[in-house]
Length: 539
Image (cartoon, rainbow, N blue to C red; front, side, top):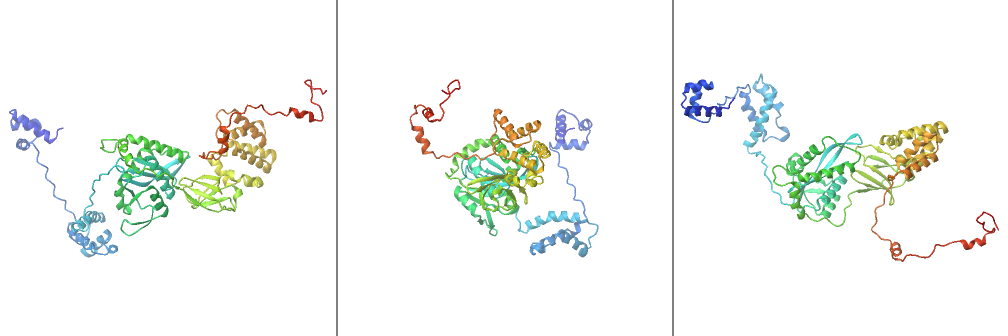
């Protein structure tokens, strides 16, 4: 099969070789008229357009156009719908055998054209933009789904993208609130090594905008966002509300979709947000070798030009978390943003301080950290730590079997089948109350020993029939002593302090002490009985 252009070229070539029209028509199986057309022009004549098909709606099209033109001056809430136009054509103009879909298709095609013809709606034109290095950036959130410890959850992906180089920094949070908005900025500025000198484009996010003033670009900002942008010298530019403003920051809109399709497919399976964001940082670093579209340079090469032009970061850090002061209820829980979290039972009735972050929260009693929880993503949920209730369960052991804290510990894998087996055995031997108290004493071992060592001690004690907490502690210590790679115990690590102790500094400057170690041999003469000889006899 050859195209018509190739056919005409072959006919013209054979004609120059001396072939007749009749011979060429027989050779190529075409009519003589086609051969003469090929000899007249190297280009085939365009196919004639078919006349438009006759439609039963043709007689009513002028009426529909008149209705649509009249709607241009009608009140917005009293304009014709397609259904109303269809009903009027039937009732007032006798239209028959015309379906509703035909009328709807014609109205959808003619309505914007009539608006443009009347000068009411110019064609939406997009203009290409040129961005200078280090001046502009765009910020947005997007929803992503991950498998967190085997359960699918919906999280928020924060993205800040530099307009010149296309360098983007991402962070995934449990929520998209104020804490995530500010923490995402801090992480992005730290990763980029500076702040853009010009505008940063935003949606009208609640974390930044408290109120949109009419149809202007003016906004009433939240106090925390005002303080944050003042601290980092951020100059915000707020896009138009709704879909009309999406094209004003199309770079980051497309970046979120690209990141989601290329790095989060298939859905990642992680155990924590720290593990997930470590993967995100690696993906961001690998994207520096990518070229955007038909650009001649990679993202990393263009960012090397842009990075020196960013404004340096301030010396003082900005606190992105929110401080709250709830009171502990009788269930030893605090309520934070419609969710409940457990604290140690000794704090019941007291007011504590909660430092709320985007993906976790920390509870303080005065200045001492007493609890740390991963933030819940749904509303009306409860997160309990069994360790917080152990002192109270020693007094009320009957409350342990059906407690919510125990079920959550089982689901999280902290209360293992080995615990259940040892608990069942000790209850058979010593009774429910005494057996449960023995289990609680074993659970208290987790505070200063590794989880793995305690579980191993439980398994060994169960196999040997040692159904006491002391026996479990002894076996767990044996495993801890023989473990070449001990694992850290679940306890808070204090931050390294930059303050140098004057006492340690003075002791470090003292000369070495060469005096002999003190002895108490001279005091043996004060003993009532003389000391024994080497043979064990007294003189």
